[in-house]
Image (cartoon, rainbow, N blue to C red; front, side, top):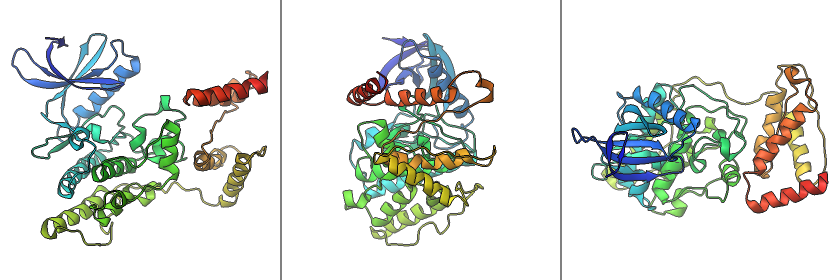
Length: 401
């Protein structure tokens, strides 16, 4: 029988692109654990760093109910292995098997998930990768626990500058619009609410709201497309549960629930009605939704005319025109923030956003800003399909000779 880091392997639970998960047993006391390690026999520095980061975050959450406990971080072969408790359960993804859950089960699981998020957010932890694959459930008791804190952050907010799939952290199908790095908005705890909304959507309908063939199409959908109501896909879903789900999936964080408490209150009312009457009557949502974090709205004020000019110029370029616009002003007055407002229309047109900076420290390098910008364009193009890459290769060769 195989062994890993001194443990006897009982079974492989999951084999992903980045990690492999095994159920193992301590040969001395026969206690079972779940072992998580890099999928590659020769893991990168980043792979090991991610496991180390997960251990540091999760070991401080032992008092939080609903989180899979971690016990140790050990060396295993050429990398590291994270030793976790064996909850004796399965992922929510495996539990659903691509089918919608009964409403009673949905409400029971949903309430538990919100309570876990509430505890995490009170500790200023943003999970950033909430999805059914990272939710462990006991199929008999419906007890759930959250796992995989590999990209979680303890910062109250983060600036996202993602440009392509190689640098993206998280799961595109469940990621909030601001997590894409293409919204000119920082990421905070409300990003988890969006991912929770996508998870609720899948629990109610059996599928995610947006499917696409590549990274950019998925990101475009999260930013620009409105999902169908869960009730339109599964008529057994009460319209109010569909409304709660869609509110969680609002494109801007300000339109979502602002606190786990407000969401808990609405879901608890739904559960009470369902248990008593077998239906859920309409009631005003978010009546008890008071933000437990102070946030300044991420909106540019007094720049509506300038933003409109930029967007109009981009629309003209998207229709085949060639145009150059120059934004001038003193340092620190918000030129970059203004220009970044074109992120959303660019994604809507499936365009590319690139930028380069004329840095005083690199002023001796000719055309440094242009080199930065076009290097970024090449990196984005390389994430496209082989057909699209061939098209761009032809365009570049025709233009450059």
